[in-house]
Image 1: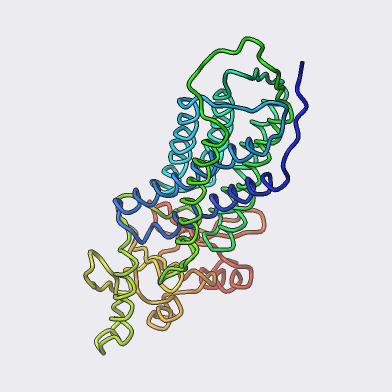
Image 2: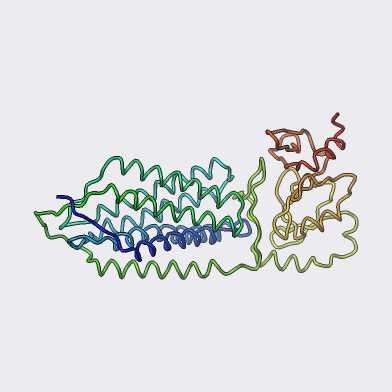
Length: 385
C-alpha cells in the first residue's frame, strides 16, 4: 500500500539554498581561467566539479531528510557513495568541455545536457540506496519529466552563465541551475511511490542520523568554498566570447592574474620609444613589442586587451581605450565598443539579420561585430556604395 508522505518546509528551503550556493561556487571558481596555466585550470575545474557535484548530492539527501513518512528510511553505503561520485565526475566532464577547447554555443548546450544527465543519474542512483524497510517504485512519466527538466534547465543555466562571464551572469546561471536541480528532484519525487517492505532483510545501512551528519559536513565544505569564491579577485575580467573565435585555447594559456597585474603596473608609464607605434604584450612573463601594423584586431578584455596578429592571440596589459590612442586612426577603426579593427585587413562584411560582422584576414576564422552606429562609417571606409 502506498505511503503518504509530507515535507519539512525548512529542509526543502535548505536543499534549494544548497543547490544555488553550490552552483554559484562552481561557476565562480571556474571564471577567468584564461588567465591561468593549463595545470591551474585543471585544478580549478576539479574544485568546481567537487563543489557542483557535491552540491547536487547534498541537495538530494537534504531533500530526502525533509521527507516525513510513517517509517524511517535507511540507505546502503555503496550506492550512496556512488551517487556522489557520479555527480562529481559528470559535472566535471561538463566543466572540462567548457574550459578546454573552443567554447561555442553548441558546446555550451552539450555541457548543459551532460550536467542534466548527471543530475538525473545522481538522483535515481541515490534513490536506489534506500534499503531494507521500504520498496520504491517509479512512474515512467516522472522519469520523462525529470529528464526533461534536468536537461532543459541545465542548458538554460549554462547559456546564462557562459554567455557573458560576469558576476551577474554567474548569479543568474547559479539561480537557474540551483532551481533546475531542485525542480528535477521534487518533480521526480512527486511521481515516486513508497511502500512498506514486509520481507525485511538485514543489510549494512546508513541511518538517518548518520546521513544527516555526512550531509552537514558536505554542506559545510560547499559553504566554505562559496565564501572563498565570493571574495573578488585582484582582477575581475569579463569573459566575452567573440564571433568566429572563442576563448580558452589550450595551446596558448594566458599568464597568471598576479603576473598580469604586475605587468600592468610595470607598463603604466611606458618609455618614450613606444611612441613609434610598438604595442606591448606579455609572453612567458616577458614584455615584448608588436608593430601596430601587424595587429589585425584588438578586443577589450576587462582592464586589458587581446590582440590578434592573424596567427595567434596575444595579451596586452593596456585597456582598449589607451591602446586606441596609440594606433594610427588612418589604419584602425572602432567597429564596436569592445573591438578595434585594422581596416586594411578586412576581407568582407557579413550580415546576420540585423547584426553585422566584418571578416578579417584571408584564411583565418576571425570576425568582429559592427555596431549599428558605426556601420555607416565602416561602409564608407571600405568604399561600399
